[in-house]
Image 1 (cartoon, rainbow, N blue to C red):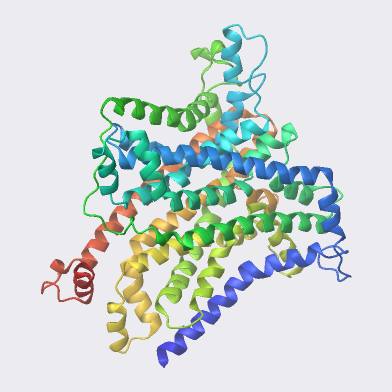
Image 2 (tube, rainbow, N blue to C red):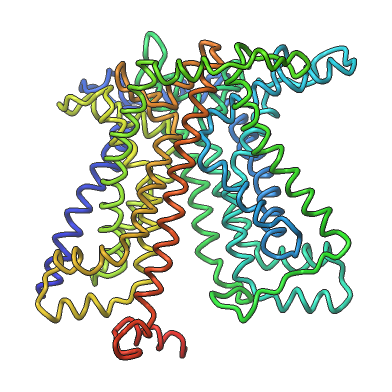
Length: 588
């Protein structure tokens, strides 16, 4: 009875907090989209703003462009990510470790930097690609960075990591016996891949594609940097422009945001429906006897070269452009490069700039604190949703995961609306950006914490409770120490995301509250490419350091998990509760 009462109080407190962080701002913006008066002023409700939005030629066109953009990104990212996952997980192609390493790089490189690098490659006048074509006699530029195909190209390359990870996980747990039977029957490698492997992992491929589609709908960096200059407007930029328009029409901006949210929510609901029924494919399990690979024989080198070529264009080329451009006084084609022009002067500017240093402090302070709060909330939500005996405990998990359907521009506008009404002095400050970070990245931390708790036997917690310890003492003395390495890795991941997010600081931060991605975007709007790339190289160095710490934490988490679950580490082999639980699972 005592534990049930504690669980109920904890769940109610968490529910209230999540409602405040997520439901209240979204409800405010929905209510505001129906209003006829400015934010916070009572007035009649109307659908006029929705009629205005839906009848506007630019908005209707932006819906079509959003769907085309997201669809193209989904095709590019899923095909490339799926192919790379197949090469690394199911074949004996050489260089698989290098492929795996390179495909993870987009996680730590801010999207705005990659986008600007591709602009420097594809630009009509100063682009590297057009400069090379002109050097071989092309009469006119062949590439244009400010077009929809270029946007799909860049966002697709930047998004291939997500489908790679999801499809690779499915391939890794697939029983290879069916592929071996196909090969022994005389089927070619390509026929086995399309007729056997692909149908078996189709649920994972579909789920990955829909998740990429959702993320592309909410993408902001590529549409802002490449779409706006070329007049290619998607829903994310419509919301941004409506919020920044002068004179402002906050009600119309709210209507844009609600329509944007509705599209993302529909696609996410479809994703949830597919993943819910993915367990019907019984040929994929949690445990396989072995993980045989397909012998490619004569095509081993071809597939390895293809995979490395894809990543060379998608990952290495933008990084090279960023580094080289940071050493030049201005963008220039390769035919004009002169080593005597290389200089570190822009790095000196990046280290001495008051704005850059202030943005770095803001990122470190706000991102670090927001990440701590996010991980703590996520750990408690995961415990309640997986360990408590409350019937409605899953509602907390659903509520905490809901922000994954919130595009950054929609969440930013919702928080702007709410904190214009609430009498708290955080409007247009870095602390409002911190609240946005907590809300936006909570789903990722919850999923990580739930996975950690899923690997931890509840026997230790039950033993602590039977010894008379309350929930708070059990959670602090038993649960947290056991999952601490994994939570540190989750914290580092959230910190990394705060350094790459552009939409939230661009909408919410006022003067003095700048974050590094918004400073890079401001430099881009001022055409200061050398300075922004120098700052970008320093950012990437810091992100790689964070990634290294995250990897070290993951290794420690695995080793710690082995110590916790390994009965041989006990004084009596198998005598610990976790050892007994592991033996039972092995027997099953």
